[in-house]
Length: 296
Image (cartoon, rainbow, N blue to C red):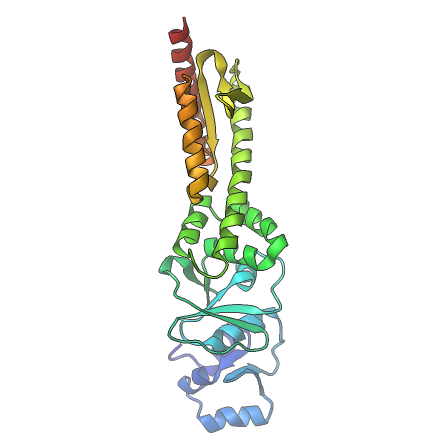
C-alpha cells in the first residue's frame, strides 16, 4: 500500500489500519500514539486499530485479524467462506493461516494455524487474502461439524466443481482436519453419484429407450442401469472411489466380476451426462445394438 494516504487506507479497509501501514503512509510514531490518546483510533489487536466513526462489525473483525497476523496471513475456514459469500454467518473466532516459519500466538477471537499453502489454494478478495473456494468449502465444512455437509453441498451446487475440490483435498492431505474433510468429501461424492444416476435415468426415459432396469442384480452385485438382453451395464461414477483405496479395489473386483459374466461396461460421470448427453446416449445405443446382435 505504498503511496496510499491514511484516508484512502481507512476507506479501503472499513476503518481498520495497522501501525506499520500508518507509518508507511507518512505518520510518525508519535502521531499514531497521539491519535490513540485522543481515542480517534482504538486498538483491536496489538498494532491494529479502528478509526472513530467506523462501526465495529464482522468485516472489521476479519480484516483486523488478517492484518494482525501479518505478512503471508491467509484467512481460512468459515471466516473465509463468509467473506466469499459461501456461508450465511461469520464465525465467532476467525481462523488464520500463517507460514510455517512464523507462529504468532492466538488472540481472543483469532485462531492461528501454521502451514504452507499452495498458490492454487490462495486468492485475494476485497483486500484480504483468503483460501480459494475449493479449500475454503472443505475446511469450513470441517469447522462446522454436523452442519458442514450443507455448506459443502451448497458449494458444489453453486460455485465449486467437484474435481477442483478433490484436488484441493489432495494438496492438503495430512493437514489438520484432512481426515474429516476426506470423509465429508466421499459422502458428497456418493450424493453426487446419486444425482448423476437420476440424470441418466431421465435421459433414457426422454430418449424413449426401452429394455433397461435400475439396480439390476448380476454376478452378486447391483448394476446402476442395465440392459439385460444385450448384457450392457452402465455404471455412474461418483468421485468417492478415487479417494479411498478400499473403495477403488472393491470397485475393480465388481467390474471384473461383471466382465467375467459377459457384461460390457460403460462408465459415465456427472460431467459426461451434463456436457455431452447426446454422445452418451449414442454410445449406449451403439453398445445395446451390438449386444443384441451378438445374442442372436
